[in-house]
Amino acid sequence: MNLEHLVKEARSGNDEAFYQLMRLHKDKLYKVAYAFLRNETDALEAIQEATCRAYLKLSQVKHPAYVSTWLTRIVIHICTDEQRRKKRLILRSTQPETEAGENIGESDQAAIRLHLEEALAKLTPLYRHVVILKYFEDLTIREIAAVLGQPEGTIKTWLHKGLNMLRHDLGKEW
Image 1 (cartoon, rainbow, N blue to C red):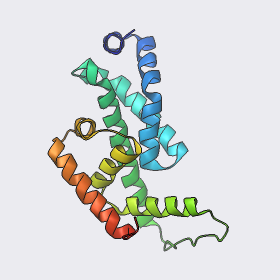
Image 2 (image 1 turned 180 degrees about the vertical axis):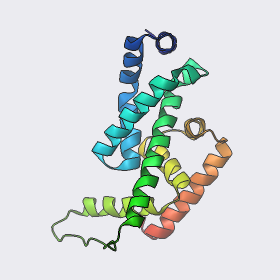
Image 3 (image 1 turned 45 degrees about the vertical axis):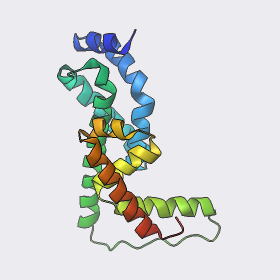
């Protein structure tokens, strides 16, 4: 069964077609969710929420050929909402947050990854989303523009600004 046929069947109420549609996209959606949330449990919850929202809103898909982009956008919105919610919880916390020092036995690769994740976390959400989609999910500028619903020129600008902020934060050696 091709993708467009699956979407049409799912829209007509065929639950098995919807299940097959989600199975086709599960790996990609999980990668996107994990790239944003950096936690397996949160990523799986985001996929579960995206599945529910997609099931309820499947009738809103305008072009069956773009269902992959539509599902990715749902996941990104859910991840963004979750990040905002977590940020509010951290800000409400009464205990000041302390920076964890690096363990002496920690590998260089883990330290580099941690440093990079911290730098990514400092970016504004739009810049972080574009950088993650480009370099962690290997999407093209055109695909990112479709996912975020923005012109390609805007995506290029956000990517350029995000990379400059990362370079500034990480230093010249990066």
